[in-house]
Image 1 (spheres, rainbow, N blue to C red):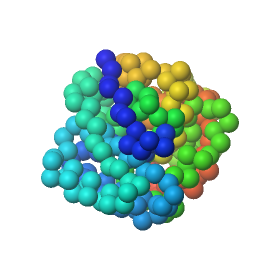
Image 2 (spheres, rainbow, N blue to C red):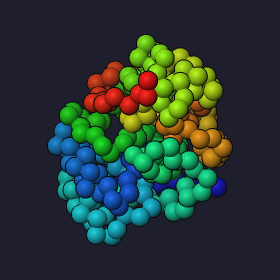
Image 3 (cartoon, rainbow, N blue to C red):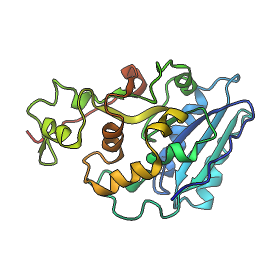
Image 4 (spheres, rainbow, N blue to C red):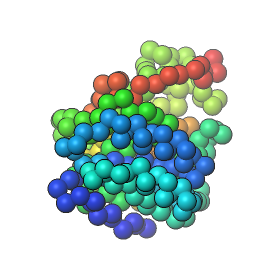
Amino acid sequence: MSFEPIVPAFEDCAYVIGMSSSNQYAPYLAVYLQSIIDHARKENYYDIVVFETDMSTENKKRIQALASAPNFSIRFYNLHNTFEENLYISASYFAKQCYYRLALGEVFKKYKKAVFTDIDLAAVSDIFELFKIDMQGKSIAACEEILWHADTRQGKRQHGFYIDDYLDKIGCSGVYYNTGVVVADIAKFNEKASFRKLLQIAQENKFINLEQDVLNKVFNNSFYTLPPCYNFEVINGVFEG
């Protein structure tokens, strides 16, 4: 099982910005992309690729029309039915599109680095700055999940599990990361884990946080920690006790 790697849109840029969306979330995708455009700089190239399986032709045209500047490209990459089977969805506020992130290493093989994000975000500065961060040899970078910080999660439960017990069960020690914004060194990412391996782990487990738990398990203690400003969260209480 493999994907055809996408070719960079700009000859002089080996960086790509990826995200996943369903047709239902196209309006939110458009708002997020506009926030990226609003904070972009003319000297940078913004090669944006949206992973999808059901985006309508009309919505694709509307979203691609946002990329009116010559240093912007917005493309869609259809993952077809790869994520249709044996993938656990733990809650109604999650969707299978979350798992699409696991394909970033395979699809973006021709790039040096990728920034892959959720779409329920708003950029307040130039997203391209993430590519300039020195990851100190790490294959992946993300912000710590503040909700599951060691002090915050102590004695707390979610989805019927005590969080500390759950993290021990999935083999995740140390810092737990929120993968809503990740930076990946593509070569190092693929050295650590192939898409086939990531998908297999996802299919064989019932993870609370879907692909986020897959990445925390596989890259355990191998993350570079981004400053929290790169993925600022507004959180309501979700603990069960």
